[in-house]
Length: 476
Image (cartoon, rainbow, N blue to C red; front, side, top):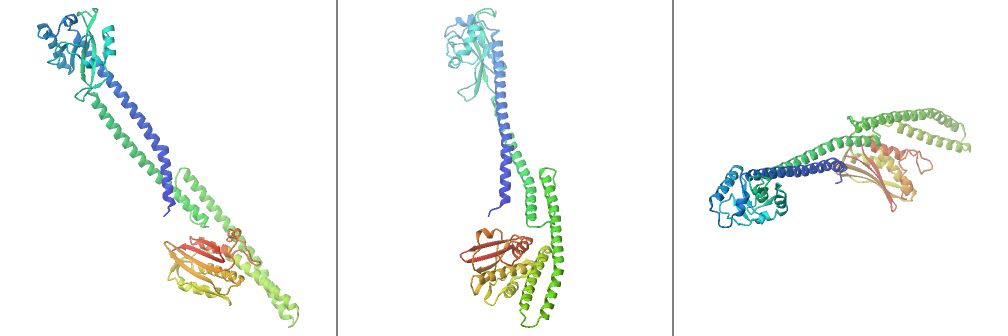
């Protein structure tokens, strides 16, 4: 079943999500990406500088000329073993793997046992561009991170090894300090934290949007209900929207409008009642003297016919005045149980004519309504139906009263055969003072509509194929 309130909440929630939550999440995602990349770059630079420093410190004890002259198979010489032990000591202290190699990327000394002189370092060969700066300019450099055969990410810092202990001598070898990039564990932790913070932000943002939606729609629902009440003519209940935002201002404006409409409605009713009262007194006098005049005329006098016509017109005017008074002074409904199996037959009996009998459908339903006003509305519709059926030349059971309960509504229908209502006329039927009859006030159907609205209902009209049905729909 269509629920406009659910659709309203969904629409506002979607708008808040698009306007607030999505931008916030987008900004946080951008922030997380930038923070991750900046952290990765800074940690990478820090590790590279640390490894470059380790490599440079280790070269201070190496004479590159001696290591460069060693040939494969000369690993057992005492001096070479002394250099290896120095590398092993630095490696043990720093946790890095140290290795010395020539411009052809062949080993000259290594802190890892078992690496022979002349072993080719394929990994170092991949850093050819960085190592060119080491051999040509004597610069300290670091490689990009790479994944080793063990699946761990590594980084290498390189430093030049001079021919003698004097840095002014030529660069003949390079020393590499390689260590695991342990900062990746910190980055993984940071990434996990960013995901958690992002999920938390999303949950908080969505919850805030839902709460804001409920707060906004609550006041919108109150405004919509107040507008509906005002539209149905209920001007007594105030607009209960108390907030300090734009919706509160709108509620205050609507309440002022309600008060003004109530005051105007009261003035109109007072004016109509006053006019009707002022007209009623002269009518009573005119009716009295017309009766005296008729009594004074002898039987057979043709002037009695003129007096009869005057009295009929005065009677019509009296009915018009009474309808004005009833429309102007209509009271608020006093709701109570109404047994429809008793009310409908009574209305049918009063509305039936000599030629047309109003048929009643059994209901077994008890309505909650103002008995007198509901009776007035049904009687008005039934009499109109009888007149319409009679004008179309129908007789017998051409009018029917029915009541059907569906869900939370009760439908009271008056059906009749007869000429259908023209489309250009149907939209004006319930306007006060609109009538298609030669003698009619146009207040009957307007009164029916006001009664239905006062009961929180409506009046529906269906007219086609020589049949017309007026239905009063009120809450059960």
